[in-house]
Image (tube, rainbow, N blue to C red; front, side, top):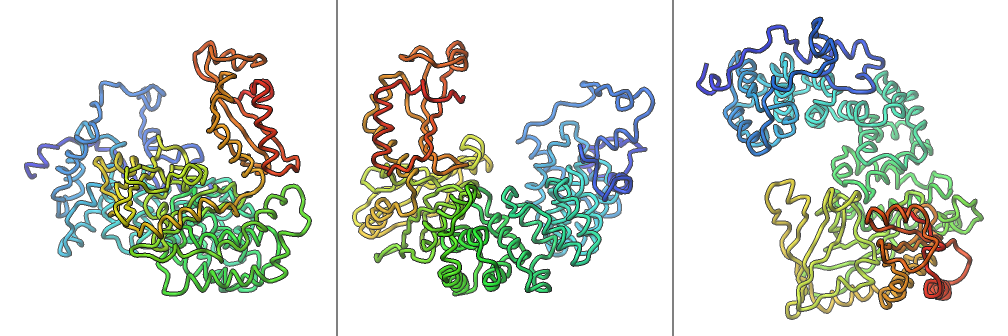
Amino acid sequence: MSAQDERHALTLPPAAPALYDLAVEVLAASPDGLPPRRGGFLQPARAASSASPGSPAESGEPPDPGSRADPLPRAEALAVLREVLHPLPGGPDGPAALHRRLAHPGLQDHHRHLIRQVVAELPLLAGRSAEARTLARGLVRTGTTTLAVVVGLLLLARTGEPEDVPQLAVLGRFREFTGPAVEALDLLDRPTAGLVHLGVGARRDLFRPLLRALRAGGDPAVRAALLALPDPPRELPAATARRIVEASRLPGLMDRHPADPDLLALAGALLVRMASSRHDPADLLACRGVLGLYRRVVTAAARLPATVDNAAMLLSLALDLSSGAGVLLDWPPGTRTALLESLGRLLAQPRWAAVGTRPQDAEQRPRAAWIRRVGRRPFEQPDGGPGRGPALRVEVVAGDPAERAAVETRILIDGRPAVPALFGRGPAEPPEALLDGGLLRAAAEPREVRLAEAACAEGCCGALYVTIRRVGGEVVWDGWRSPWNDRDAGEPDPGPPARRFDAAAYDAEVARAESDDSWSWPARRTARLVTAALDESPGLLGRWGVRRGWIGTDADDPDVVVVTFWRRPGEASGTGVGDASDEARGSGRPQQFRWTLPDDGTPPQPRAAAILRRLAQEDPTVHAQACG
């Protein structure tokens, strides 16, 4: 035994079962080969199987808190893991030696998330790959602790071979091991990786028929299960859409059913989900065969019925190919432009152009109006203007209202969208934030501008910032930063290099974007007018003891204007606030109010003026609803 092994020596429980053997046993006793619905972790199953009468696991009592050391902090745990894994033990005793090293009392199961970083640092030279693979297989098949098995899985992600797929698929169905197992399977067998992901990470009640069909095989069953998914699958995360494509081998399925319009529409809907700006574009960029899927959908789109759903799907794909995450794919020269032009020609045909003008029911009316308004925008885009250096393009994109897509100010530098390329955790900021206040205008005084915020919140998953300043005849964008990335890396992220734009071309593009509201609609214009007026006259709300909040349009009904405002306890000057406000006043918290104004057919200017008159004449809390 080496000195390193001696430092971490600990006698393992002789009866501890291999986690892989336990996983096989649990899956054999589970319906559809899936872990129990509530749980999916192996450790509770092991505790139950090894419990003896009177033991904590058998009695339901928690273990003695003094029986385990306090977990190591992140930095100390990383240092210990580096010592444990550098160098990797070799020879037949390698798995047992690594078990002993990992038995450090401060290393606990939740430290498994740190192992990926340490394994990625290992210098696995070509001469040691086979030795590392042998160690990894021993850990995967005989490992008795979560940490040991995770090390094995992550080593297989670097050294694995096709013969490792069955073991990876078994362990990947349990949550302790899903991430590293899928990481390895992504390199070895994408369809199996998709099966594992859908079986663990997706809504199992929704995907159980598809999982069953994929495991059984056969085009008819797989096609039927795919088409039984929600149509279109608007609530699916991008990661789930990607795994459906890969697990079902959708491009090949489409080739075997070339005249199937339902399969074609589903493929387009899944592309829309993967390209959604609310989700990380990494899934779209990593999806195997995604370029071929775009090509199949676009070239066969003429076979689709000219319906609102299909027109909206194709228009969403065009917006993506014009200025969204789809631009970032590794396209062969000219291919993306050709697909975009093909969509433009198709949607200009009379039967498709008429879709947005046909009478629609109440549910489809906003979508039809969006198709009329946005229908030609992705095919008639400016090039950013002449000038030296990189080309800047600022494109406001209002997405499909049925998808509750964000209205975002997409920034393209040399034709590449900056937000998905550099951030990817949420859409770009709306035009009200970037354009209405002139934040993109360049001055000699540097200004830091937030270009995007995470879909959850900046405090959760960060935001993307850049500093804009004018230097002589150029506008410089530098100082890129993303607080989430900085926190995750443990040190500031240097970000991309500075970008320098010709000042005249830059100013012209920003002015064009600020003056273009062809993307907007009456309720949105009304909301922008109200916002601008309240910003110019803050006393209008101040007289009532309230301050302006968010103003925009309702996510469910874009023709409804929404005005929100806040009142702090003790600042009220009106009456009729209600119990919720009284409770908030007692606790010292501000009360939020929401005033909704349905469409009455009035044009934006007079409608905004009427809203402002009412705010000037009446305490707005009287006719608004307390909402938070």
